[in-house]
Amino acid sequence: MDSLITAAARALASGDALDALNYVACRDDPPALGLRGIAMAQLGDLGRARALLRRAARAFGPREAVASARCALAEAEIALVSRDVNRVVKALDAAHHVLARHGDYVNAAHARYLKARCLLLVGRLDQAEQLLAGLDPTPLSPASRAGHELVVAGIAMRRLQVTAACAALTRAETAARQAGIPSVLAEVQAAALTLDTPAARLITRGHARPLRLADIESLLTSNALVVDACRHMVCHSGKVISLETRPVLFALARELAEAWPDDAPRAALLARAFRARHADGSHRARLRVEIGRLRGALRAAADIEATRRGFALVPRGARSVVVLAPPTDERYATVLALLADGEAWSTSALALALDASQRTVQRALDELTAGGKVQTIGRGRARRWMAPPVPGFPTALLLPAPLTAG
Image 1 (cartoon, rainbow, N blue to C red):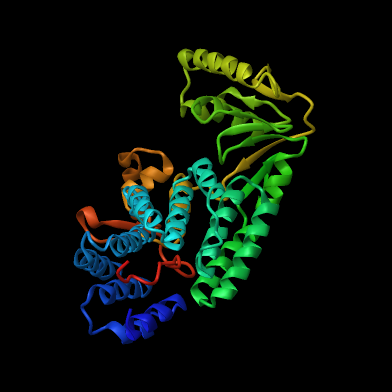
Image 2 (image 1 turned 180 degrees about the horizontal axis):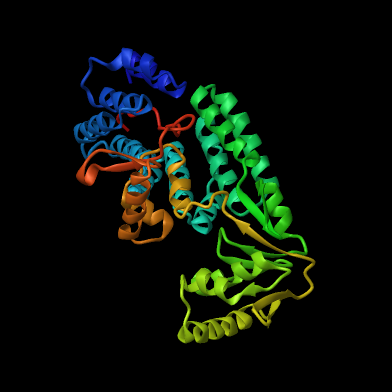
């Protein structure tokens, strides 16, 4: 490894992509191509970065397996940052296999961390946590250790484990300061702000107020009967009744909870569950059937009593009944929440993260675009969606630096 390649690698490790380009911009040998690709990725020119990394991988060839795997690893991270997540996991697994087999444990650990980050992005928390449990972050660079702790914090936040999330964010900030890369530190600080950002609304007795993650954690461990409209479940005394696959029952449960302690009129229940503006005998018969099913589903937490004008929710042992709703009434709040990270998403990546069909996601994006809440870039298969304007800093590229022959 000559002095210019060494200097470029050190510049990239410190986050100085422009300085790295000054060392290798006029060179076309494989190590220089790889480092130029990483530098272009850190500067935001992801298309050019991909092209350079592929040229480097071809130039290294099969005899330089480790260097080619490092190029593939860097390209997989670019795909992850671009939210092109469909083939990222397979690419990271392949790169990890080659790197671990040839003793490059630093980049092999980086590949495992990136896979965990991808799994977190698409909501596979159990798989991400299992992967992190078998990953020793010690070989990682300070910047990658900061990213590792961000994944740990992300899992804890999604599971409403605020204490664990705070501890992980503290470790992430320590590692980010050791790295000395401003974009990495900015990403950690932006993640820490999530703890003080309203994450949901509490609706009780007709009034709504915002809640932070710590407030939600306290609420779910309290004696209240919580109808969770964020995850479509009913929670009470540590027990969870999932209604995620039964949307009609959940709609009825939410209407009853919002009306508590009063009863909910039949007309309101029909409008909420069946969107029926003019109810007839068949609607009322179906309502009785669905109320019976809901009564059976909630029998461990509450009863449902018939009244003269409708039905009333009667909790068992709970002091109150509340509704935990998303922070916005937007119909497509989950789509907007994903787009809020400032990255450009494809419909296939959104469908994977939301566990929905691509056509369903496309309809949502069409409505949001028509309302000016989402903007598009590119055309055809390269078309991407993002929320305007892009908030804060983009996701930091924590790419492996030396791409020399192995």
